[in-house]
Length: 277
Image (cartoon, rainbow, N blue to C red; front, side, top):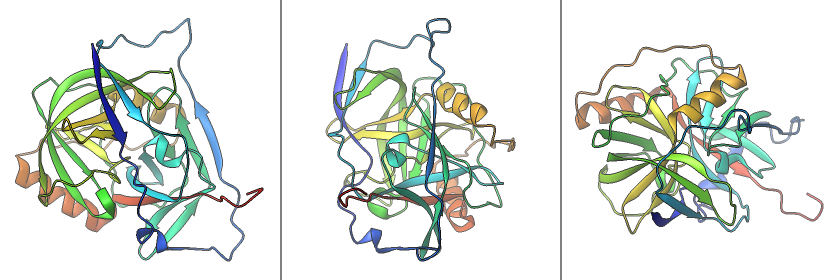
């Protein structure tokens, strides 16, 4: 059956937030190198998913914007959403009051996920899993809606698929029903794109991709697609231990700690819209 329309979690009205200075903006920064990873082929079809399909609104226009990224290796590998980095002239990770430019990104062609290969080093990394949780179990989404840190609690509906804008290419996703937010609020989740969603066992099982405000749905990348990207990149060696969440208060405490440690950060997209830029 057909699912509802969703909007990407990428913000389109964060001009004030984007006044953050680019570290090294007066220095010589190498051009952004973007690689594409696509495991799909007639010889190796991807796993089957449910018939429910979501359409994510996307007019294809790019503008300066902000999303979320999280460390998956202490040596500088970070995951985010592909639509956060795609079409950017330069991409930078938050570093205090600055955005530190990155030069290498691997974008998935099968899922809304991208991996930064040369980001800031991190004292810790988040554990990943290729296994989808059971429907009905809780999820903990973390990121920066409207530029501010927020924890969103949800319940897994199940596996589905989505396509973005006018594209006919479908991607495997997990669909979640939103249950609550900390801090409370009912505004858009724009800006949480690229942030992690955790299963109750403590593993990251996807990247936040889009939300449907009217239906209260959150869409995340499929965990196996996320893992195929990290393995293909060759940049993720860490295997952190996952600890089950003891509940919402525990999730909030961990989110605060990861923010303080810089494991979850804002990521910025700069688009050069000048003629010939």
